[in-house]
Length: 187
Image (cartoon, rainbow, N blue to C red):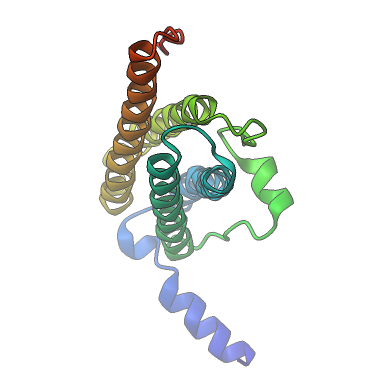
């Protein structure tokens, strides 16, 4: 692609003013979306890796849930990337950049215990929920397209947290039925 073609593509794809957004607002929104994009990549990696190593009596259910959610996190990253580029931003391109710009910490599943992995996954989803709620408050009604996308992602994150919590509660119930006691519930 020559320089003229690149400029035509950039001008066509980058239309903040046409969306009624000033440059400062555009940059602020892109900043938050870039950080959320980094979180989604790390969540994908966390859940995909956990699905490979998870152990326990409910391994098949946990593996299925982790893989399903990993794929949804990857889809969220794609949605965020599209919106970042529409708003003239650049998507983080390296693992280092992703790690340096995330909101939520990456939690490597170092222990294959399914119960612990579910607790880590719940904590990760709660962080994502808090991030997306903050983004919604920050954006307000200044960018309705981004707000709708964030609401869609937030709905998925709340569903993920619920699903992981249900599996954790099933593990608790199994342990109780076997007379093994119940782990301390998460708040």
